[in-house]
Amino acid sequence: MSAESPTDDTAAHGIEEGYCLVLRAEDSGDWKAVADWLARNTDHAAALADYLAALRGLHSATAPLRTLPDRVGAHLGEFELKDELGRGGMGVVYRAFDKTLKREVAVKLLRTGNAFSAAESARFRFEAEMVASLHHPNIVPVHSCGEADGVPYLVMPLMTGGSLAAWLKNLGPDRCLPPKKAAKIARDVAFGVHHAHQRGLIHRDIKPANILLDHTGAPHVADFGLARRVDCTASSTAEIAGTFLYMAPEQGRGAKDLTIAVDVHAIGVVLFELLTGGVPYGGSDIASILRRLTDETEPAPPASRFRRDVPTDLEAICVKCLERRPEDRYLSAQALADALERYLNDEPQVDASRRGWATDLARVVRRRVDTPSMAIWPAFFWGLGSLSVSQATIQIAVLTDSPLWVAYLGWGIYFGGWLVVLWLCGLARLHLLTRIEKAGIAQHIGMMLGGLALIPSSFAIDEYGLALYPPLMVLIALGTFVQGSYHWGRYFVLGGLMFLLTAIMSVVFVRYLPTAFAVQQITAMIWVGFRTRSFDREARTVAS
Image 1: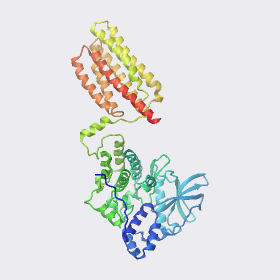
Image 2: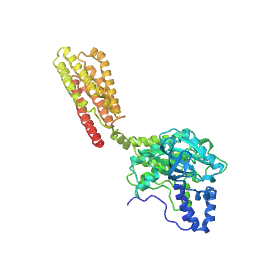
Image 3: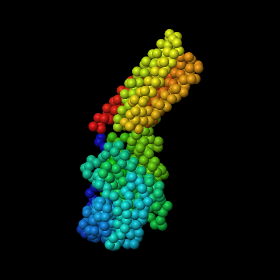
């Protein structure tokens, strides 16, 4: 059986068609279609107006919206308005040219033009003040604000990538994104929203139309026209603010005490749409959407119902965002961003995972942090030389009761050879190494210094230094195990095997510890060396 198609608006008749058009207008900001429909269906005008008045109080705003003048080509102070970029709940955004600074910017005007009320003007200024207090790479900043010819305006940087909604529309009917891409967008949006929450603001209208993309495709949260302060969301009267398709259940019920959980829910809806191409609670009219949204008995549908290849972890994150009770969602947008970050890094989920411990463990072991290249991989093969010669020398000294200087020579070759390898392949080429490789070099230097610090006490116990092997092998196993946390999960397995072999060899192969140590290390180094070389070639192939 094929996956279902996500719910979307369908054709409707009579008054339901009017509701459907209003829903689309809420999302796009363009009310022309609603005005045209009302002109053709005057007998439904009163019913539609009464419904909207009870629902949102929009009856007082529809008239000025329909008579909004076209300002393309007009001059507003030092700004020349070039073309219209989009319309939101309160404003119209134009691409404009700043004649003073000689640059293109985005200018947002109050939608009602000269007919704006004092309350609308105050709300517009409030948006400017709120956004001006936010400084985050995932929030569209405000350069300045002012009023020209009696029209309030905001000046913002021009986001050349357009809105996420327009970008998704251009993808065509099958507008599903790869899971990793969808998770990255949702994560960056959550970062920006959390910054707003930390400054006491709830956006209340997170949706693709209010997420703008820059020239690199990075998302930026925009349009704080419906935002409220966290400590001022309760009011004496209930209101429904936001876009129905992206509302949280408590928003749809007109709750007065909204929290930051409404934004977490909206990000979950956006993530759901990026994965499936539709929204979880769609419908042919506003009434049916609100009914599904506020129905406590209907849980949010899983994304895998509409797209079979959605990863379990990502689906669990999405489901947690869409929980009906605010307290069941992520406690903050940062917690959501952290969960998405763990998914992107192939790490097990803490509070959204629906898998067993065995699956999580396997995921950890498979995890590998991608790097641009692995220039240090030859070090593993160069190190084989000093390791083989040194351990052969020490083993011969032990078995033939050779003079102590032979064993000292072997240990000198081992530590000296590795210091040379670390210098030539690491420290001397530090500018070529990645962050992960630099961490590995620092770790190996620490292990080498730890081994040198063990020499005096070990030689006091055994003249040939056999007592040095157990703590040295534990030190190497520990370093290998730690590498699993920042590079490749297979190091966890390799480090664990080294711990086990150390315990066995330290008891069984006491006189042959140099050989046992050499076999263990050579096997590990050859395997890691070839795997690291393959990582390097893979990265360079992708880069080219």
